[in-house]
Image (cartoon, rainbow, N blue to C red; front, side, top):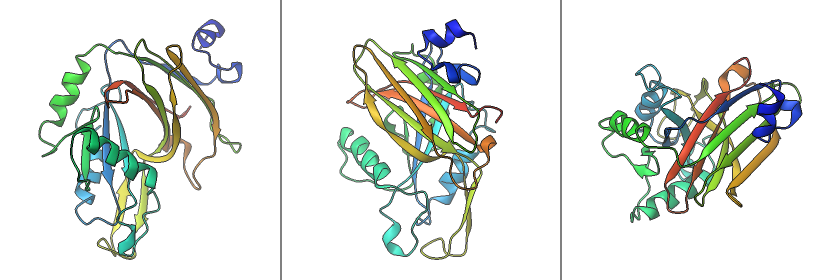
Length: 247
């Protein structure tokens, strides 16, 4: 990346020699799976999401996030990837749709629930890609190292919204020892390992610059940064993902 290009994206000079991505003029879909290792009906959804790339839905078409909720932890197995943050977000999305029920597995595309998946998911992604982007996102990453992963994400939009940033890991596995999936080896991709507090767009823009600690035992080639801009009414204006440098 050139120094001029880095400056245009407000990327710190230390990151300019790393890897970067800029969102396109069309809208990339945001696909979210709400799941739990304590839920016996969730493994098929995990497998479905893991197979999306092989099914032809590329990173240029859809940013994929697997968000593990915490409300199944009480039955004996604490999902190591679970967080109340994801439970709260799932409840927020459901409230926007006028639903009082949250459950797993549940899939949202562009902030809207997709019942009966996988039927129709690919069509929704395709329709989303046919829309003009309503926000511009830039991601720049330094090479991952012992000191962590230096991340800079910028967003611009003429509309009001918030910038969300997540550290995502694929190729993770758990040997479940209790609960509904006791005895099973569960594998996951696109797992959100760190969720940064959303930053409101001020004067049409937002910047997130952080150095993130890497998950214990994580391979750099399995990590990436995903970002999206979403309005308070749930509309996803744009999304973008970038693997770590050299991944």
